[in-house]
Image (cartoon, rainbow, N blue to C red; front, side, top):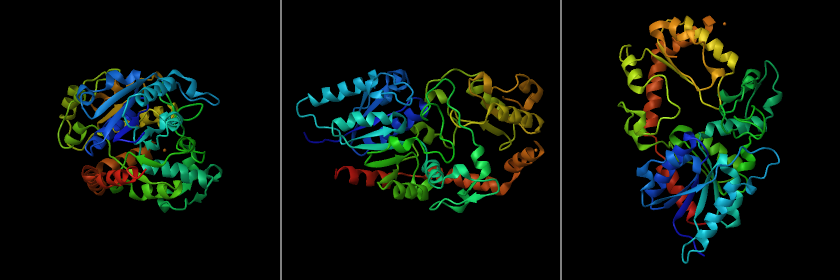
Length: 386
């Protein structure tokens, strides 16, 4: 059986994985590829109708898969059976060619074994930038876990500014509240110096993709390509079209996605509050679900923000252990929404340093102009030779 122009894209759980995968499908569609997005059935309600109605896109649903634990056999789960049944059914359709390849989100890396049984080449996909993966790989290779106090350990191939110190080892890893992590036996990223869990996930891949581009992450994309010994492309930045269209304008989040879990404040309330503050005067504080401070560090941050004199917005996860003191909003008064001296000085510099502001504006401009066209062209040339 030959191969047509169909590419499978397999997404991990959560909006942070689904959105980049959907945008990747859209980018591939502009190059006349048909894409099949493989999702967990729990994500079906998060697919916009405009995406599902695209004639160049199909959606395949599989059962939710559980967190990978040591010794567990994910191929025995219903999700694997669903994927096998889907591909088997495709093979039974007369004259329907096999997909060119499967682009697999690292969180669903186990699916590569199913695709291999159908002789479909696999490309590993990272929904984050290449710099993070480069640092994890480099730290593991130089055995950063045994760095001593006062020592600075360089990582060959990476900038000197990314040298590892003892204090870098103090980073804590946490899984998303009640969600799926991608570290074997738990959530969050590996400890600095540990073997990155994605190393085994990408074994057998013919190439790698990152949610970044050469304009933003060029040296790190090249580093990963050299280290992994396979073609590596930055195919991002990947985000819904409306995000890119709204770079210089206001937009309501519901236009991009359904609201999840609710909030104590609406977008309109936040906007009205921001309009009462001088431009560039508000500090925005938010952390992800997998890489975040510890509970004690959250409490310290709350104390610092309370002592600070400037307005701030603090976006907090729906997790009781990570919510600030309920009295903080009341005590902070009109500044609210949800050592200290050194931290406060640092924040003052962040908000008041004109040079730093200029750098931020330059970074935004660079991001707005970033493109992955050359990388996607290189991908097309590569995969069409397979």
